[in-house]
Image (spheres, rainbow, N blue to C red):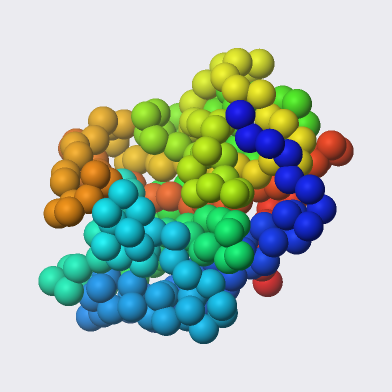
Length: 254
């Protein structure tokens, strides 16, 4: 169970999340046909360092990269590679976590690569809206199941599926903490949402099945995942600060 953050710690969380959001926004400007995911990773890492933070991903359980970059049918944790070249019509999720003075800010977005088919744009838009629907269900002393229930209801009504086994997480003094924040659930169930703690909301929305296949990353215990049916997946993520009266989206910037 997370210990609530004090005022000074909340200031540091806001800064780490601001940095993560700026890195994501900056890196997204370089998404275009012909660029490799490894090049994007280097761009993100350079920007992170220039803002006075370091990537929380590098070395995390042996993970060797600054970001996770997941195109098309890769659900999450995609390892950046020189041979993975983005093509016109692709979509790609970039996941960034900043570590600043001992505090962690985590955010991701799915970007369009060149001219993308309408059905793929709809998937991406649905994933973003699903995240916001989940966030709107947050209440002080509410439950993670409230978030998951609203998210899954929204997604399934659009004809898509949500990943069940992977989801959001507590964050703050450590990269991954309780509670687990799923993209499905029952109202009033799950784990309690405690004021003055932070957690992420990050639904993964699939065109087809919610089943996935996992793959190893050399030298790491972190796995990366593809959809079991080869159809595409999209994801967005914000870090949230829960207060005693509501919530604040810490990774939301202009």
